[in-house]
Image 1 (cartoon, rainbow, N blue to C red):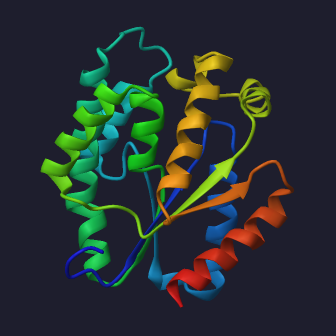
Image 2 (cartoon, rainbow, N blue to C red; image 1 turned 120 degrees about the vertical axis):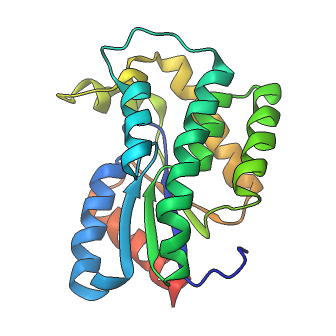
Length: 211
């Protein structure tokens, strides 16, 4: 799918409160015992020093700035370009398996949010920056917006996006499900299940992909 690529990029997606962070922690514990040297763990926005600076600007809960939609997309793409160029691309060439908390599907679901004009804008700029690069496998943790919001409210620390209302998360979920139907690289996982069961299921999906 990507030229001269030896490794794999595996992205994790889902609305906030779907359990991505917990799942990735469990996966890290498992793979450190089995395939330790093959895995790199990263996130978006962020992943490099430069990209993390942009992350702080975008996610700071104390930040009351309201960006234009296209401005926010451009900031995310700037972060992604730094991340892709300096971390993801080199790691894949070395044969590493990159586990990434969010990637392109998040931008479509959150920032484009069922807006076809914004989707086209995002896809055009993204294509210019990283060509047709996409994850080899995307794990989509699916959960009802009501359940996710209840989990978010229990957190001690939230970011700027966590302040959104229920209707927003419903739209984000709908967009994710539409993406899942469109792309075979996306594996849907029921995020309402027990965390250990989810971890076992996802480990099996990943091992089948990389074996």
